[in-house]
Length: 87
Image (cartoon, rainbow, N blue to C red; front, side, top):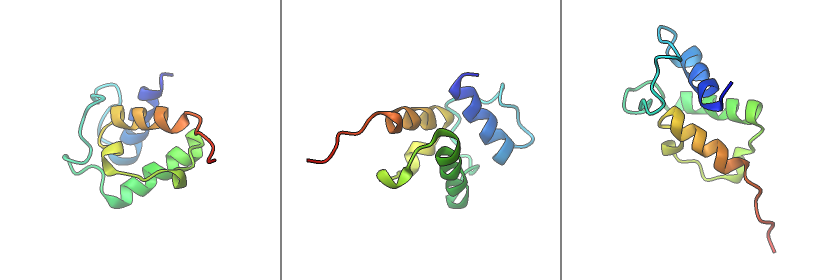
């Protein structure tokens, strides 16, 4: 399953139970629609850590990273890149 679809399925399952992942646009704005608030962001972050093995402690997290499924996908891609080691 493509990652963007998995993100949409998670978001629908957790925050839009009346919706459909297949009908959810990848650019649907979760923040503007009020779907994701600060507590929901914590749930999304926990999911990223658990499912995608991203150590979010290594990042300055911005709500913009979680605005849409597409934004979350970009964050996962960026967060999964190897980090340069500190000198």
